Amino acid sequence: MCGIVGYTGSKQAAPILLEGLARLEYRGYDSAGIAINDGDKINVVKAMGRLAVLCEKSNGGAAAPGCIGIGHTRWATHGKPSDANSHPHVSENGRIAIVHNGIIENYASLKEMLVNRGRVFKSETDTEVAAQLIDYYYNGNILEAVSRAVRELEGSYALGVVCADEPNTIVGVKSHAPLIVAYSDDGNFFASDVMAVISHTKTVTYLEDDEIAVVRNDGIKFYTPFLDEIKKEKCIVDWDISAADKCGYEHYMYKEIMEQPDAVRRTIEPYISDGRVDLSAVLDRDYVKKLNRIFIAACGSSYHVGVIAKYNIEKLARVPVEVVLASEFRYCDPIVDQNTLVICISQSGETADTLEAQREAKRLGAATLAIVNVEGSSIAKSADKVIYTKAGPEIAVATTKAYSTQLAVTVLIALYTAECCEAIPDSEYDKILSELLSVPEKMLKILDDKANIQYLAYQHFNNEDLFFIGRNIDYALSLEGSLKLKEISYIHSEAYAAGELKHGTISLVVDDTLVIAVASYGRLVEKTLSNALEVKARGAHVMGITTESLKQKVGAVTDEIITIPDTHEVLLPSLAVLPLQLFAYYVALYRGCDIDKPRNLAKSVTVE
Ligand code: M6R
View 1: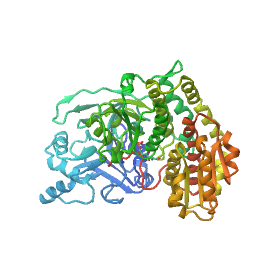
View 2: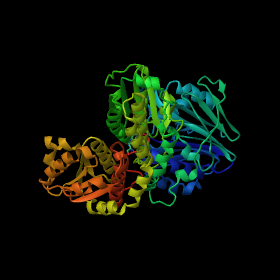
View 3: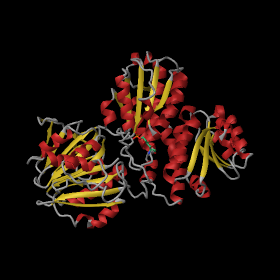
View 4: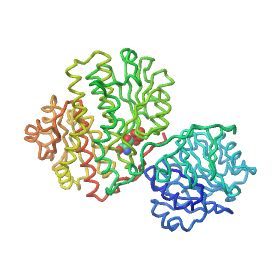
């Protein structure tokens, strides 16, 4: 939700900010803007629409001279996308300019106070209130003004602030929204995440809530809310620019689909040695033995990973698992005690709903484990223990490689828990682990055979309504297949437990309705095929997704078929998700959709 970046140094700021914004655009793309201090005054250029509009308006930054500035790319919350509502926002007198990621919840009462003191506002945003408030407290020292103003802000914010009277200084401050600062030989930065600065430097510092950073050419200083100076560590980021680039691919989503075999291998390897899964660093064996329940809280695709994990953990370890949408967890009065483990799954590590669920779990006394892709993110930092997925930066809004790595981690958890609870025979354990290790290779095979999936996408890209059906893990996977398709191709689709369709929804099936039957789970394939026949009898066109060994059986019922290699049932979704991702990708491609940046969405959802 919104990306912010700032730079001060020896180079012209605007082109550097535009490049940073291009790397942050996945966080929101309703509008973009920059504010540059030219040494005398602050000049703002901003424009509704994609960053390209701003680039054109500012002539690639050339039209905005000055070596210090801030930039913003927006996912609209308060006020529709428009030039006026775009950031940066400026105080009425033009002295203060700010960029903001988050939501200032008490903006209305602050605005009323400022209006009563004669301040005039130009936008509908909560951010303009913060700009005016900082200016209201400005008394010749921007650091003091920011520290004073933020004490009155409620909600979430990462702010970057420049002041016309202090042309060498940017102030950054955060509360419940991510903010880093970064160091290079040519100048220093602040940003929502590392992505924005990775082409300049890998040396960064992560800010904690309520800390304030003063970024200048010659260094960065840190302060507590009451302006005591503090020292903070520098970290070196362990990935490079190629991880954040398209590397010749047309879309990030496609690149990220292709990266899945490596991402899964990188993620699982550190936890497997001598033919055993060892998670003892994050989950104490004695604690696991005493577990009475596991909750999994997550959103969107990460939630779908949780649904599959429930089936697998319960099947292998016989520990009850409840999967709850993170946005509901706080309000469902969860029954939690010290023998309950709450697992929060998040690619970004910044999803506000998931972060709040984790906080609630801790408040209720549960142990928390986070499965997170972004190091140093809020969810990672606030969890008791973390398992990092090693997917690398995921830039396409539609998740693919993060989903696959999360799923692989949940299989590790299922195996480890099953072993700790003595619920799994050795032979079964060995079989699953060896199949898990061969997932990357089998994924490669599916990716190599993608021509059939592309062909089927071409046959069906004009459909406006379709259904995914499946049972058990095939149903759980259908949820993801449906979301992926909706999200990037704007086709309406629903995922149904195959047996449930006949209880109402089958009335929507008419001649040529496309139904995708995920039928990989051998134990229930006959049942799913019966449901496929029911929809066929009502005119549906059925596409099956199944394994090599079930191909004949499934193909005898379906009109067309996609196959995946055979594997242990626990791992079927890890393979079957690939055709679903590719199908969604190609359908969106043929429909001419903006695949990496679907409408109305943002990659990191930092509002509740
Ligand atoms: O960063 P998170 O994993 O917490 O994000 C959760 C969802 O917003 C995310 O999975 C979303 O559903 C994806 N865009 C789907 O592709």
